[in-house]
Structures are given as C-alpha cells and as structure tokens.
Image (cartoon, rainbow, N blue to C red; front, side, top):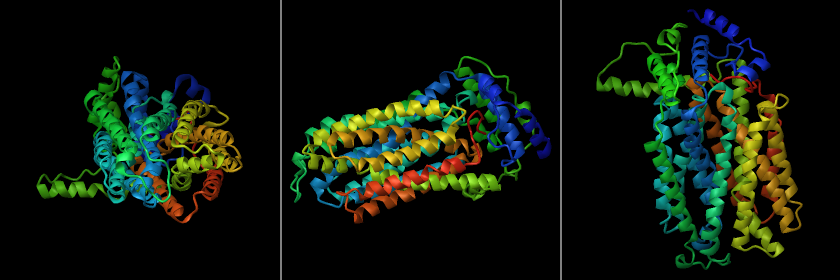
Amino acid sequence: MSAEEALDRGKENYQATDEEVDGHACTQNIFMDGAVDPIYQEKARILNDAIQDIGMGRYQWGLFVVVGFGWLADNLWPVVTGLILAPVVNEFGFNGPFLKLSQNIGLLVGAIFWGVGSDVWGRKISFNVTLLLTAIFALAAGGSSNSVSLCSISALWSIGVGGNLPVDSAVFLEFVPASHQYLLTVLSIWWAFGQLLASLIAWPLIGNFSCTISTPYNCPRSSNKGWRYFLLTMGGLMFVLWVIRFFIFKLYESPKYLMGRGRDEAAVDVVHRVAERNGTTSRLTLDELTQPGSLSFVNSREMDTSAKGAIARQLAKFDAGHMNSLFATKKLAYSTTLLIILWALIGLAFPLYNAFVPFYLATRGADFGDGSLYITYRNQVILSVIGVPGALLAGYMVEMPILGRRGTLAISTALTGTFILASTTARTSNALLGWNCAYSLTSNVMYGVLYAVTPELFPTKDRGTGNAIVAGANRVFGVMSPIIALYANLTTSAPIFIAGAIFVVSGFIPLLLPFEPRGRASI
C-alpha cells in the first residue's frame, strides 16, 4: 500500500463523531492533518484497534499500579528535599538552595538520558532501572557526612528520579485502550500519594528527631538524625517498589515501539501476550499489520554482524531523526514548541515555590507564634491530603466536552497562580494554610493533565524523545529556581510573587495548542 492510500484509508477510518467515540471508544486519531507518516499512522491505528478489542484488563490495571510508582517517585523526591532542607542546613551550615540545585541538575540529566534512551533501546530497560538507581543512592545519602556529599548524592539519586515520567507515561499510554486513555490523567493520584507519603513519614521522624531551628548553627549529628532516618526509609521504599516492578510484574515491550522499529512480528506477539494475560484473545494477525506497507524511516540496509558493525549500529541510533519528527509539519512544530514553553515556565515556578514551602511556612509560622517543626510538617500533611482528590477531579474534567485537556489545563494552571498570589495576603496561620490548600488542589489537577496531554501529543516512535525534550526544558528552568533563591530573600514574599505570576501567564498557553486529545487515540 502506498503512503497516499494509507492516508486515505486512515481518514475513512477516522470519520467518527464525538458520540461514536464516547459510545464505542473508536480509535480516532489525534493527528488529522498528515503530521505523521501515513503508513505509520495506519499501522498504529491497527494496533490501537487490537488493544481496544482486548479491552482494559488485568495487564493494564497492573500496569496502572507499577507505572504509578514512577509518578509517586517523581513528586516524592523533590518533596523529600524540601522537607529535609531545614534540618540539613541547621546541621551542616551551608546555603540551602545548593541542595535543590544539585537535585535539579540530576533531574535534568535523568530526564534527557532515560527519555531519549527509551526511544533507542526500548521502554523496558529504562522502566526497570530508574527506581533501583534512586533506591541505591537514597540509601547512601543517609550516611552523608557533610553538605558536599549530600548534594552530590542527591544529584545521583535524581538521575533515576528524572527518568520516571518520560518513560512511564509512554509505557502506560502505549498499552491502554483508547476508551481508557483518561486514566493517564488519573495516574496523577500516585503523584499526590507521593507527597502525602513523604509528609506523613517526615512528620514523626524529622519532627521528633531534629534540632530546633537556630542561628548561628549549633546542631550536632547526634541530635539531628531525623532526616537521615527519613532518607533511609524513603530509599528502602524505592527498593521495595523496584522489586515489585522487576520480579512480580512482567512488562512487555511496547507494541507500537516495536512496530516503529520495523519489528511487526514482535509487535503482534506482544498484543497476543497481553490478550492472554487479560484472559481473552486477539484477532490481530501479522498479515494485517504488514498490509499497509513498510515504514520509510526504518533502516533496511544489510546488517554488519561484526563487533565494529554492532557498535556502529548503536551509535547510529542516537541521531536527530526522533527530534526532527516532532517538528515535521508546521502544526506539529507549533504544538511541540508550545509544550516546551509550558513545561519550561512551570519548571521555573513550581520548584521556586514548592521546594521552599516548608521553610516559608516555618518562618511565617514563627511570625504567628507557631513555627515548630511539628506544626510545619502537620501542615505539610494537610496540604498533601488535599492534593489527592485533585487527581480524581482532573480525570473527570478532561472528559468534559466543554473543557477537554486544553480547557482543564488552562483553568487549573491559572488558578494555581492565583492562589499562590493570594497566599501572600494571609495574616494568620490558618489563612495561610487555607490558601495553600487551594493551591495544592489546583496544582494537582494541573499536573495530572499536563503529564497526560504531553505524551498524547507525541507519536509513539518519538514519544520518549518528546517527553525528554519537554522534561529537559522543565529541569533546565528548575535549575534556575534555586539560583534565584540564592540571591533572593526567602523570608519575604518575593519568590511567591514570581511563582504565582508565572503560573497565571502559563495558564493561557494550553488554549493555543492545536490538538485536543479528548475522545481520540494516541498513535
């Protein structure tokens, strides 16, 4: 089949109304303007139909859990760094933002390395390594003897953390039926659980086994073990989650990734394995998947089986092809650029505000006469609990025709900034906590939608690279936030005004996105 015939056939198959999509979960394509190779588009539709026929079963629900571990880790570890900030600064007497700077550098490296890598060597390797890497270095960080070792190790554990979202979102999206694609948004409930879990464990450990905040610093290690216990506990948790991922749940390679690599037979085999795991069968055949033709971008040259040839093939995989595909057409380039800008701005605003929330609450609480560590972490737990229903609300809102992904993301982002700015008006501890609860709710809606809509707007064969680019932009600007903090007076509201204003401005960007994934299948 020629590329033109494939495109024509695809258009015929995608002539579905919203009612047909809602009622029968038709795999209507997100990209309707030839932005993606038409043969690839047709083969992706065939796989989407096959996965839809299998339905949401045991394999996908298990994947919802183990992929959720990545969401949990992605939010847990930045929160961990924020929670230990006051006690480690008290003990080591260094400039606290350096800890956040080292972490964000690690997150940047991890996002790019594991994200791009997942398009090169597949999803399984990245998926199975990131949590283990995090666990090893988090456990080592519990024994840090000075600020330099702690900052260095935090960068290393963050390389593992940074790879979770770019890889895990791709893994889940490529196995879930189109009718249940909204669950990618609901996955953010694990993100909220990460914050809640970190806060609950920090409350007794750091709250009861730490020095009181003092100046000048007079806090020996023997009186300040809470943050070490906390890191050891969190590192142990990551190891347990990795064991579940690696030894208990069997992950198959993404069929769309395999198809994008020209491995049609392996892709069909994975679909049948998933069907078997779900207790059903699939009608997909190899002839059906190969009928549209061969992909033009798959290298079909005769293979050099020598050691030199093997090395050359691996190096050749790291070309600009995946990146170029994200800018292949004007509309696709416009979409990718807007996503990069949105992720970059949120990458600056979120850590600038959230990473220093415990310190901000403590200093504000001191002004109100209730600045103890116990009260600070109690408030952090309250904020974390409020974030949990945000994920469920996001999953409901993105399926509303009047809102969709774009409207929900725009509203939640703007409201997040509004509540941050409003928090500077608080004159009592309870008022400050109230504004932060509203921020916690809307920010969890925002992140739930952002983490879902981004991989939906990238084709499978380039999804890891696309996720890596936007996550890389997010982390680059995340590196800037502690640098700003190094030169800002954190006891004032200045960082809060900056973060709030950025969120409000960012709220207009989703409205400009040219594609709306609601009711359509990713390819």
